Length: 289
Image (cartoon, rainbow, N blue to C red):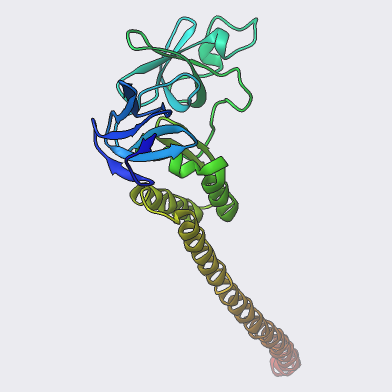
């Protein structure tokens, strides 16, 4: 028994990886008791299983894959769904709805809707068939879809979900990661959405490096701290505006106080004129007599 590669070494198609009591897995094949790489990628050994994680490439469906798709056509009792890659997928109403259901299945899901589904079967001639019967498979409302290389999805998820859970916890976002290279992200604000995209792009570019989870964790912690520091700066400006409004109030009140005496002066002048006119009238009458 022998292994002919280092951990996460970049290998090429046809390269000998191991011989003896090892089992081939994804990205490898067995020939004469020896295991070879079938694609360009990172070689890994898990127990006695040898596999190669592709560095790049299109999505090839596998039964049991979680995928994110967009409904492109409603035909009879079927939805035609774009899941990326060279194959279009089909979802029958029986695999998504409880009976009885309406004859018009567009009442439940229509063109443009984004869904999470599972590949229930795959035939290269007819394409993959999907199901939404499992728990958590649903129409994904709101949010956005980020496209990444399908080969980098295992790194984005991390071992036992360590990477994606860490990102979700830091940013307080909701995500669904599809094996077809699509990530659905729903964020409470634009700043956290941008950080999520930055994190996923960084993982995609540096998927072949070690200690990536720690680096992403540190990066997000620093960015979140910056966001927290920038928020209080908005409060003083609001306080200043409130203070300015309070300072303006006495001036307005003073103006009202000034206006009231003016009205009194006008009344006094008017009453004086009336008295003068009343004094003149008797004199005029005496002259006429």
